[in-house]
Image (cartoon, rainbow, N blue to C red; front, side):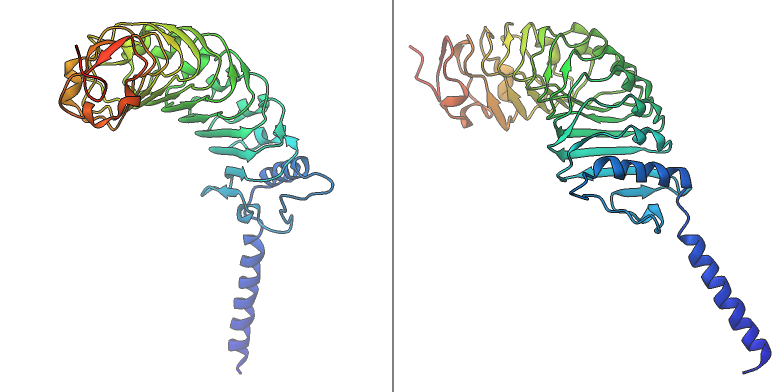
Length: 330
């Protein structure tokens, strides 16, 4: 082998070793330090759930993703037996866009205020845990947020009106908590479209803000609360709503003139105080799911469309509804 060939091979392997060495340190050191602190906070002394090797590039760690600039953009921790609180160090990942803590039954405590530092955060899911405290108003400062899911927790207090300041928010779910108070008036004036608003299984009370009638939702779910008054503003022949669930509240309005759009596939109004009759206009649409039982409706069930495809459970326990599939009208 010539000296030239030997020299070229030496340079090649030196460059290869250098490249390999550098590739192990692509993760930004500040992000790596923050993640190691998060790991320490989440791991109990007797149960190391998360195991990140400090010798490895943190962009290769399980549950972590990095962007092109090698800064951490995603932290997803799910289905673990973690007994801890959300570490405040999550706020020390300045380029984070996705933060998920889900299906962690022993995750407790409040949502840490350090999350307010995550100015690039787009996707926030803290669900199926035992988090307590309020829905934090500081979330309204995170202008890139597009998706918020805080469902299946033990959060309490009122819903902060500041969430309506989020210019890109398209999905908000706060279901299955212990939230009280009213739906904020500001929720009718989101800067962006808010196709999904899910507030079910709480203790919300009062009437729905009329301003919500200005929003064209894809899904509305206010079920199993203590809401009262008129909810007819949520309907409309020109809207694109697919699913409306207002069941098990105390709504009182006349159904007679309520028009639904062709897009509505799911409509659940059971266990309220709704009066009037079923509009004939509803026969023009192909509903997939319908439940208007346990109300104060009267009159003949219109024939045609999909209304006769449902069984009696869809209509029973009303004041004086009649016609198929119920008893014939006298």
